[in-house]
Image 1 (tube, rainbow, N blue to C red):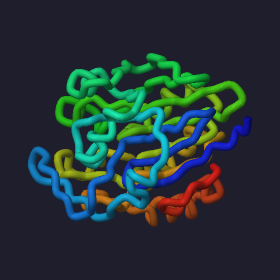
Image 2 (image 1 turned 60 degrees about the vertical axis):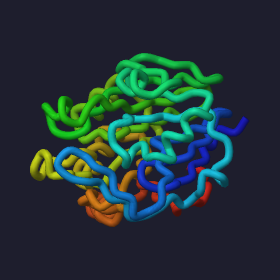
Image 3 (image 1 turned 180 degrees about the vertical axis):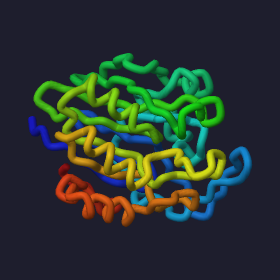
Length: 252
């Protein structure tokens, strides 16, 4: 068995990962561009549609859903997909709202084939934001003979990344939700990692290649992918950044 991970960037937070014999999909978003979704205090507007239509995506064995509260992580088409997926892992709150979802508390494990999926903490904004942004989770994937993968979900906290790095040494690939998302609720404090925080997260994960997702495709992102690239260039980390061409399966 090869231990090469194949990743296809669909767009937004949606990444198709083939890992240890299973096909994973992060935060499914497949609605067309131009859609607007109400949130407290405003709307979220989608600028770019999926690079791969659902009909061409291929098999999905597991959905890793960081949270269900916001359409830029789970839109209408993405939610419709969940019923056809054998395993959907998310927060206990999401499990209470969506039939068929298995909710995991932080550091709880689920077994999928030969893979251990561990839910890890995430905080969707600055300290104290949880009552407003809701429960969010990240994930770690581990399997014998395969690299350890961290999927951050919508996390903006470097303290969270530090805690995960200390508890899970040797993370080899970190899928970071970046973009510095900001819907104005917390002033200039982002809801996801901005370019500066993404660079700092890379320092906390010294063995990991960094695969950025959740950038550019929505109007409320402050730091597009180019800002992340410029930050990694300026700090000598560019060789660790894995930038995927949209829609193209790539061994990472």
